[in-house]
Image 1 (cartoon, one colour):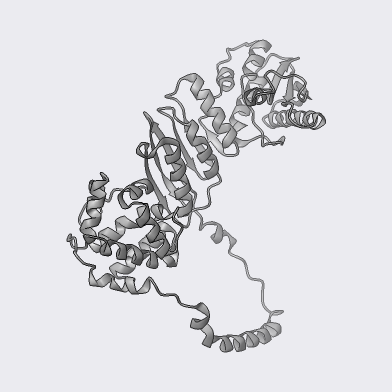
Image 2 (cartoon, one colour):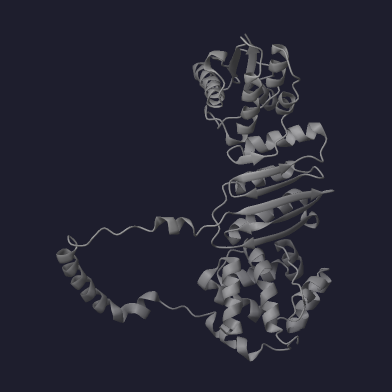
Length: 427
């Protein structure tokens, strides 16, 4: 494979542009060598934006190409240049900076092959310029085949009608289809307000959204990112939720990692009140993921119960736990499973004869009858989950109280959140 085709393949894979990568590269190369000063002029623009070292790392012969993000591309090229490139390449101006951040480093390395910064476009790349403007009609390209295809279709139909009854069943290789997709990943680290993001997503649009939301939350100078694009990666279920969380994740020392539908959260460097608050945020926004590392005061209290603990000790610890449900539903979120594990273990170790009443409570929003029913269903869901963890059924009782026993002010969101709860009482 030629160096040009290698470049096209690399950019197509990294950006997700597929066959359109060739046109995009042609537009970018034309921009580079038609601007004042050509490639050297482009280098000057990056230097003026404080990105000279990054640009130099892209030159052929340099050991490590440094990454650049969409905001840095904007500061170096300017909005008008980006809009011109987007228009000629047929891509959205909002996505163009991210596409350029992904494609420009390998393009610069390719055109500086041999370690020389050319003053004019190398002859090997002129073919890309001629191809960027081509528009081929699929119909015209294949029109001569249509009669032949029609005859073949008629012949096949006749053969199929004679032989389909004789054909043995063919197994469908469904397992191979499932194996193609890879899991999306993302890691986050906040160090004194500087946020570092790394991972792999399936499309440039997903990458652009993630980086755009991060920059909006923390500022361009406070975000460092290396997000790769791989078209074999699945669509992340958590992308929108992570963007919602960004503005609240300002605690230095906070880290988390997402891999598919699994989340590992590290709040160990935060003060306890912040650990609780952050964990509850993740439970709320990413409750349907398999979560490791949530800090729950109740779970910690259950784990610290001394031998021979009393019924009061047990219910005091249980009432500090946080069990969450899908919105408007009695379905317990996956993030609550480890908390239920600890609750079941503690109830099993409780004094003989103790029964625990599991109470469901709601806020006062909506219909009172609906709230009453929902509170009862949620209490029964928790009882069923505890029974599934080997707590004897005769030690549990489910009751719902609707919005009749508030502990917070229903006129505020904070108060309503406190009222939506599972509580426990010793019988």
